[in-house]
Amino acid sequence: QYGVIDRNGLFTVPFSLRLVDIYDFQGDMALSAQFNMMDARIKKQFGFIDKKGNTLVPFLYQDGHREFSNGLAGMKFNGLWGFINKQGEMIIPFLYDSVSVFSLGMAHVDYKGQIITIDNHGRTIK
Image 1 (tube, one colour):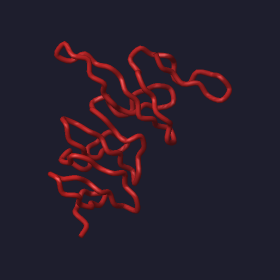
Image 2: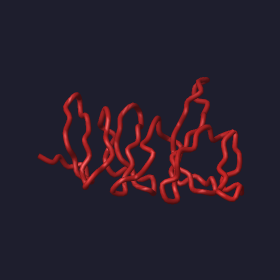
Image 3: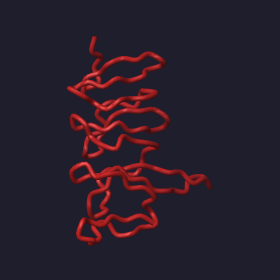
């Protein structure tokens, strides 16, 4: 079970059997993981929670970046990476084998073995 206590020792996120990992909070959000039973297999899925443990971005993803940069977080869905916003909306489609975090409005992505640089709308930067 995981939970979160603040510096005063007060619980901000109560202990829960569903949360198996809670990463560092970045502002009011933290990447978190939970186990789900799917087709008789246990899978770890990632989403984002707030400081009270409420789900902000559903636990739909196979992996994810721990923080948002330029308002976007890289997340892995169906084996490929893309980017979502803080509301959980897909902004850049899940097309990539790997992605970096955004810095100065750009991210490096691996698209079918080729490393390219994209902007925060998914457009290739030459």
